[in-house]
Image 1 (cartoon, rainbow, N blue to C red):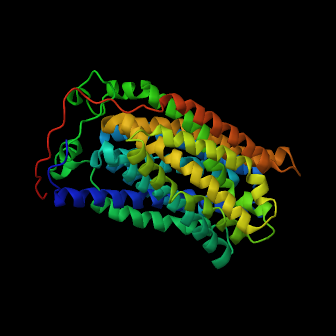
Image 2 (image 1 turned 180 degrees about the horizontal axis):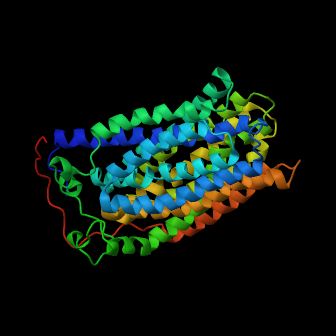
Image 3 (image 1 turned 135 degrees about the vertical axis):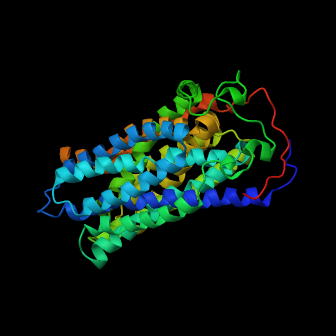
Length: 450
């Protein structure tokens, strides 16, 4: 049923939530990316004694905590709401980043980065749930696609920002941590002031009633009222939902590629370009995140308009192209030029960030439904984060195990195979859309200024 009218109060709240949650998630990257930039200097600092394997082990500690945290905080957001979870994560993450900058031993860095993983994982699942309450299914591909540029933007800006402070301004790797902490702290302020969990918190009606759409449910036999938000019964249904399970496996296969570049991109670039500049090596992987500013918007638009809110066809096509680009990484970067590296990083980012955002956010909210969106996003991202362990561990281990070998090509060939398998897993879901309850949504009615 078409929407009868547009309520300016409701619209202001919707885009306020979009903006403040976008800013919050982008802010998390200023504390997350500190170690990936700092390790350039730390690997050369004899006072720290960091080796490639030890660096990988610290990244593993982060990833294990991040995966466990996704599951924990996703369920917690469904039970207690996103606001408290995200704010606590932002404040604690800021403190941990400062502590890492003051650390003097590898063991302490590992402990702190493990805790940082728990802090960082408070962001994604709760915030995507937050969006699910304010934006309906028919617009969600475009809206969450645009919102997903937050993590691409955060990663794109955070690495050069940290690299500039650490190696151009202070010539001290510790500033990769010190520079990012206040940025996240500042983003917590508008989040605290402007964010609200759901429309009813400010006296507005449910988004489906406002938009004149049916309400999605996890189980097609249920009506929306029967699925109690935050109940263990609903969470169990979400975890058993076949599309959610498939997306979790797919994300396990995809996330190693993204995190290998996020955490080791500066090292990969430094080894393959004809330059000794650490600042340049820290900047080049920003092309990967720059592609993430475009890809989620493009795939969201295509899924909404071309495929009528079916999320998986565009993912399949993008993943097939990703596997080809990963196989071509060697020829694209063989000259050692910065331009070739930029093109390679951009193409990988473009074909990866689209399905990454779709599987981990838009489709997670669709099939988890807004009542179980936190659990669905947490489950999918949690499984992906355990795959992420491979992405952060393998670069360092391969360097240690195969000295003098082009380990980056070995790595990217494996990632190409994983992308191909992921695309094949999604083909049976090509026409899948979420179930809706047995009741129909009513026409939108006016709301009042809170």
